[in-house]
Amino acid sequence: MHKRALLLVNLGTPDAPTEAAVRPYLKEFLSDPRVVSIHPVARWLLLNLIILRTRPKRSAAAYQKVWTEAGSPLLVESEKLTDKVRALVHRDIDPDMPVALAMRYGNPSMQSVIDRLCDEGVTEVVCVPLYPQFASATTGSTIEKLNDILNHKWTMPSATVVGAFYDHPGFIEPQAALVEDELRDFNADHVLFSFHGVPEDHIRWGDKSGTHCLAKNGCCDEDVPVNRLCYRAHCVRTAKALAARLGLPDDGYSVTFQSRLGRTPWLRPYTDETLVRLAQDGVKRLAVFTPAFVADCLETIEEIGMEGREEFLAHGGEAFFLAPCVNADDGWAQGLVDIIRDAGGFSNRKLAVVQDAQPRVAAAAGGAPS
Image (cartoon, rainbow, N blue to C red; front, side, top):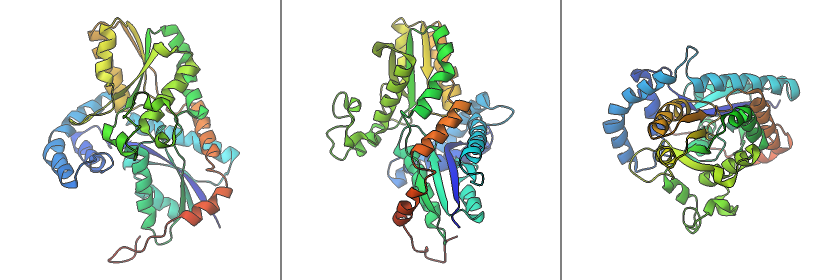
């Protein structure tokens, strides 16, 4: 008997805001070649000889600023969202469908959650990466991990993945509705849409022609086959959709990128530099959205809401408004169900195609897979 499960996946969080808990989380995260895309030997040296000797202490201090009595904001909000999605799915679609949450890095791990679902007799996993825009370092890594886990199962469930939802009304409408009254009352001089950054090379590698992405001005303004899975293009389209929904003029908002790592060029303009420049250019009242995230986390609360706010005010700004992520908002829970439905995640008609395409990988040397 066929049994389908819905698996929501967010990026991850350490188990506690301590150096001891942050170190293994960072090691797992930064060991991923889709995240730190350099030679494996160089990545190992960078991680073990430099990053893990210094960064865990600093990161733990930052996590302590955002940690709540309930735990990590990202995990807490993701769990609340999962509960609401489960209730909607059970009410409107299938009262017996398991709906579970996993983290790409940290706990609950994808491995442990998928193992449990398989033990419960699940024959198909519908995976929903909770990243609005596609990036190889997020959605791509999640898909790769999903395939790796399933390919090591002796009896392998089929799987489908719900794609990016960067401009889907199910995401745009609840994000805008959540703050439109406050934004109107705040009367911002400018609105900044800050997205998580990725190395520029990640964008160029996605363009096999080498003639479009980051190779020409306005490359993200064109909807062409080569940039259908371009992270930067998805970010620009998210910003345009939110700006249109909120009634912002074209010169009333801008797009920036935050959280760069290392010395290689990352997507620009950089958020931290833009915050200073806007203040120095006379922007007094600034509103910031972080629509690369569906749950508030270290990057939204501490990096933008604390450090970013301080930088803006220190250079002449007078008022700073950080829009919350959609988190576990009721409208977002319903919007996510709509996104999954529109992607065919609840449709039996898609199952045969996916099953036919599902790879079957031989058992690893040394014994049968788990």
